[in-house]
Length: 66
Image 1 (cartoon, rainbow, N blue to C red):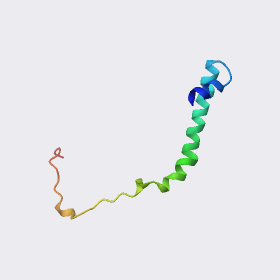
Image 2: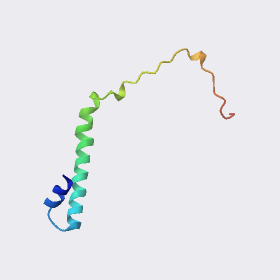
Image 3: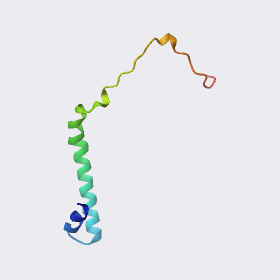
Image 4: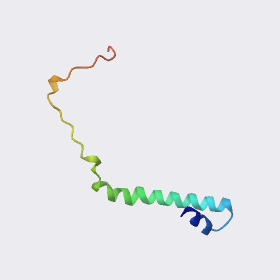
């Protein structure tokens, strides 16, 4: 697929590289502005549950003296 895109871009190697960079930046821009915000509510990353338990049972670790 990338070879097909590269062959169909106009210009020499430097022009193709510049156009490729612009295309990649456009895809990243579209992902961050439209695709990721649209998909974020459907992803389970915000459904984190941490059980507090009995807070008094937690013993401080023997870390650095403070």
